Length: 366
Image (cartoon, rainbow, N blue to C red; front, side, top):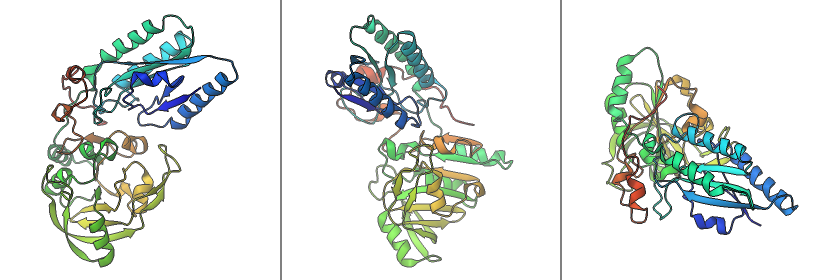
């Protein structure tokens, strides 16, 4: 008897159900139900081992590859899909029904959305239930597709509005959890061009050499810096700037949550380098920015800054949604673009990639 739990972004091969009797998935994005999902899987396993139930699972593709920009479960198409799955679970007395958005930046024959149903052996109408859930999911395909705004336009519009508001501008094309490498320079270039003197924070660049140079020079030292473009020139040339070393750390902290609460994090030696009004965090490891303790480590009080620029996407909102007047995804050149049609897929079924490409405007928290 095998029980398995999966991330909401899993690209699930239906053959997994040939090996795992119990399949359950996260129901939240950002993922704050990891523990609950594991507990549910183990509870079902315990009941099965005690002979109370005879679980088995079905896995079926929903037939399309959504991007993850509108995949948050607080509202929107993924929220509607998760709610539909919960109703089916309750109405039919199933052990678990999970909707998986998939991971579009993983190229496999099974890339894309899917639905799983864990039920008692011999339950009736399972195929009909799964087919209906997949059809409902696929019917929302167009709602997942977005066209993101240019960061320069977003920053410029925000500053013209004034009024003491605060905004977080995200660079999801270089989000670590989407395959980003902390190296694309597009957002920083727009930030320094549009708001060079506005109090702001930029998190982050992954550059061990620059972090080491800052540590060797010490606080107060001035360095000639090249931000980004270290690993590849495909996403633009490095931003050249003279910066002052403000803060040095060992890169160690513990997440406060709600996502991954209590997790020990190691950025490696890190530095805050100030260029004009912008504090730029430079780390020795490529680690996502998803917890307030990240900024506390670097002696940065977010409330003191008008603009915060972050290489992040949906998970950032778990801890920061109530800290800004607006959180806006923007599009820059990077390894994880919003327009997945530009990616060189070799294994994902082409018909799945064509469904839902209607490009509504991006959802944000403004």
